[in-house]
Length: 317
Image (cartoon, rainbow, N blue to C red):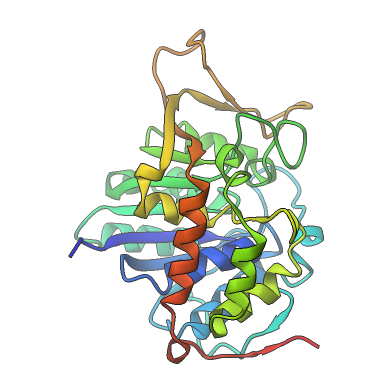
């Protein structure tokens, strides 16, 4: 049996975040040390509540949850409720969580989880990178306890917020710059692959007939403003976990990647492809993914979740 992967998961649920948390909380390959929330898709109050709803849904109240940053480091905060709905997870009425977020904030919770861990921990960030940037700035000594960082963010092939900027980086480009230039081992799972790894309509139809978890996800997906039910829905954040479990399904290229923090290209992630300005690299960039394998894997993961593993809620009227 493979050793479990110790993980701190930083997130802003968000519908595709919920799809990722579904795997994180139910797959025994992950040793979830902490889940932290951040303002992104919706406000941090809502993202924190959404994490707690999901830990309760999957009967994982043992997983600690910490509330994170309520706004970017420098810029004004703007949500993505137009994509994820006002609550961040519309379409399904979850039971009221029985646990609360920790009394300390996400940065201190991350630091404590890292320095008390007997082994290095993988950080997975699928929202704005504000919490991570604060951690590295306030507690630089935490870096020696981090195995690697997997981020959903960025793009070398065009953006989804502007022509060049992806949402998570665009939301807090100053934080992304700090993280990208930290010297940590960072893998960028950006739009270059997540807009290819779409959940196909036939897969989603199968999900809805599978179990309580599949029904819950399908109700969320029906309110998800990204992609379409016909062409498929991008599961951006899920790809980080697929990469951790099946890295051979991805094609990576090492580049030096700069983050633009001002001007009309703010939020852009620019790779020095020709090595004109840097003689080294800082990011492993995912450039391709096995889409068929992704769809088959996600279906298999959800199929493994039996109804006894969840506190089922109900569909919204």
